Image (cartoon, rainbow, N blue to C red):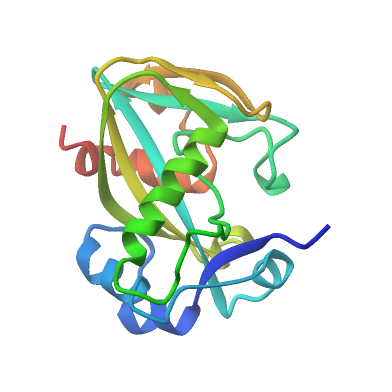
Length: 205
């Protein structure tokens, strides 16, 4: 079976755009740098995971409805074994190539958005209208997972909490109020902790 290919940029692109820890809300600046013609490309996942010279681009979709945030725990079937049993408030994963994904043109960001939709649909079923907004970039070089990933944080505002799981690795999924999530913060993966701390800026409330 051919090895999985994942979307990356060279770390130098991220560094030239401006290094940061946690979240940055300077979305347009980083979006323009990441999706510039010729910058994003696919490489084998084994190479991307072991080489911090690359940053894997990971959409991280936070779903909100009626003031609550979707949360779940990653089960034993999770693709990223380093995150098993961690609570998360973000859905997403690696972007893989498809036949209709041209990398080197000015419309690649739109193609990326379609890939985000496919990625989310592989993990959950959403039976509600929603609004998709790119709200932040997320970086954490303090651990080995974060060193080779760069998160693009999306906020999906759902009209109703009609979300069900597709992936077996998703367990205990439910919309929770912020106060309850606060008591669960220490159980969260690092990216979710960073996003939780910034929820007022992410959701605008």
